[in-house]
Image (tube, rainbow, N blue to C red; front, top):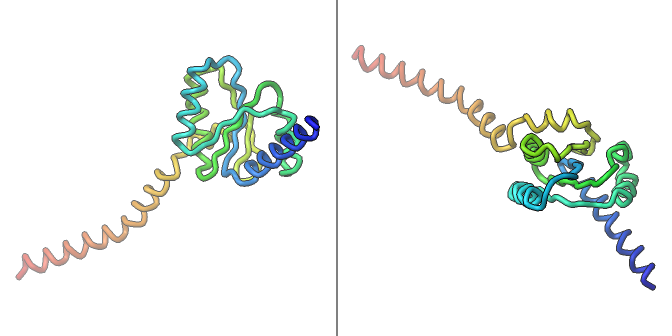
Length: 167
């Protein structure tokens, strides 16, 4: 009876991991060997503040989930202890936080990941980490959209001031 319950629990976990792999904007696999409890706690806090879920998972369960999610290219990264960051909304957040943390703590190693349903390498994760956040990109877009209107308003005001000075 205990075996059936354990198998059922593992099947539920595999389904949960599969769902997270499919729904996440970005998923980053890491090797956390060498980090102490305080460092892992700090990392989890930073990720949680950004809305990123960070879990330590068994490689065998993750392999089953990658097979169901059709992301088997990830299996090569599933060696040794693996912790996975699931970023549901912002694809840049997990990569940025983990890359910055890895610079400060050399024990944390990024193994690879998935961005928008596509398996990516460590180099691609690091390139993603160098992108501005979603909010910064939206801010840049907004200022670019406002610039022509602002310039037009300034030109109209200058013409009006000139006409007023002539009168």
